Image (cartoon, rainbow, N blue to C red):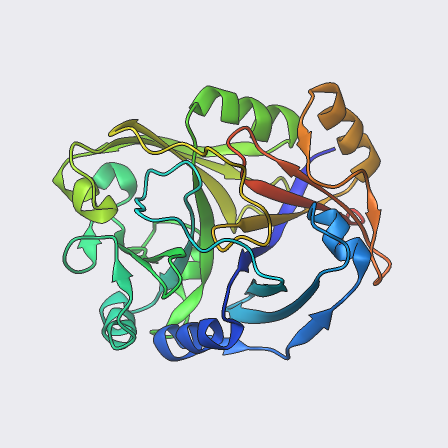
Length: 310
């Protein structure tokens, strides 16, 4: 009874066409066909008014998918001011074969930089990866990352110079041990590494002064990549959520995970008094079943029922 793989990351957008153009023209990713949904079950799953509608597109990043969803009526825009230690912060780490070339193309789209300067090589305790954080035109945070030989999932060593996929989604958490109790103790993730990142390189990467952050990698049980990373900023302290983010708000990002025993997982989460978004397991129009919950910091998680090999 555990999360087996990260199926996709789902991002709420205000302007679907502009978001597609950013991922296509800035990052070289391919968008699939647009889908329109008026299925009440879909919105019930996300804790929304069942009379809503939505347009969505899957953007392919290597073997992974990023879902872009525009809701009607729309929710709140991405909050300002904003920083990489905000409690609602969640980014996707896109793996680049040639990070300098990808950044050069992306720069033409005028993204909002988080990292000061250009892609920066981090210290050895982080694997000596090269990384750069930025935001799209609506404020969603993203990261470009490049792995040196022998570091990270072996799949990232092969492929062309562009974006090869995404390695993880990273979320800001206010209490790392509380988050570990949720992700490991309840959802069944396994530990895949932990480091304490600080120093000038980390400060430039996050655009923060005096940055000291615990980075904890948590892998699903069957497919360890892509995975989830917890970012706990010991300093500086980030802004905390005053009002829970709704799934239709632009700051909303959802981890969509596969789980084998959905009913058993629901019972475990209920016993732990987890915060559910959906009123229980939801039967969707495509025949699948799912439930949605919030983690201790309010990040949204959708758990989809699958078979052991699904």
